[in-house]
Length: 516
Image (cartoon, rainbow, N blue to C red; front, top):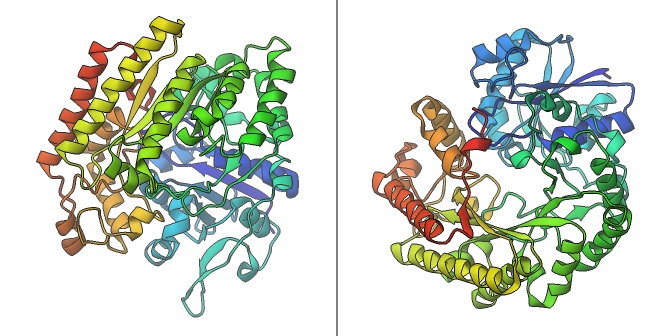
């Protein structure tokens, strides 16, 4: 058993500002279940020396680690997305240089799906967490024999075989134990020195659910079962957040559940609790959610009205594409005509009740053509016209914001297992190793900065619609096809032209929200 755990946020320069909620939950779980262990954060995204984003080189990380008192033989848990994976590897290398006895666990969705390749190629990583990290960490901290630790992948020291242990999901009863006071909010509180809360677009972030029962082909949660807190536990958490010092510096609360309103009945219950305990008590409560258009269509108009009464000011819809063929490919919907009708109804209902309507839209999809781009541009014009008519007829001040996202393939998704759309080519087994290494090396050339400025989710995943797939699959070479990149640039410019003629419609500018 060890009595020291460091939870590490790797460098993320050029990406959206924020602090990984996974680390907050891991820290809280250890505090509740293994209280004798001392848990500390090592935040390598912002330097202690000058409060500026840290570069992801081993040298820079080593210099930053001098600011921390590190104990020998401690456990180090590093969280990483595909976008921060290469930086996480360099953080692990730096830690091993500082302390060769350190034991390092890499967690996150990238680790979950790429564990075997990671352990084969990167000796600086001792273990990969592949399930609920809370269970894995608690087992390790208690001194559980490695072959019995839940949710871990490790390399057998005698036979060299990679072994994968399973872990059950946290139950609703377990998730309900995550109360506001169980979290160590230090990284968020520290950000107040910079006069801006470290959350998505200046909001106070939280997750009240995990996973998703939907099977979108591009999403890393496509194989994850939905599990969430009860409405009562969510209401308590939100009430405590609203009463916190952090909230007074934030624009509101972002609830980052992948499909917030999937259970309509429980969403109604939560809204009723929020209205009774927060809104009716006079609190200035603003919150945002992300959900599917099916949950806010005409059949669920009463739910949209309830959300508005409960203080919801913005809804993020993962529309992804208005073109039927592209929507079917991305969302795996059986009836695209019905889906697009649901989208129209959800936009109308959201605006009708004064809720801001945010639409995620993917560009550069494999198989994208001028016809599909034109279909999306025409749909945007109709959305803008609808919004303007509603503003004039109903006096609604709600706006529509389009969030451009570069279409990329992530590990573990259906898109990663399928042939690249429009080809017979499958991604190579080590495709994400090759691409993330190439992208990390390109960081100095401005590509990552360009992606971050213009798109969400633009880093880390493989932009199969922009690269020469044949060269990538057959020769492990990453070659951006200029004509395709230029087509995406023109596509984005045409969206901005529509926005300039219809002020009610805005194309979101990511540049002011990046770690620079």
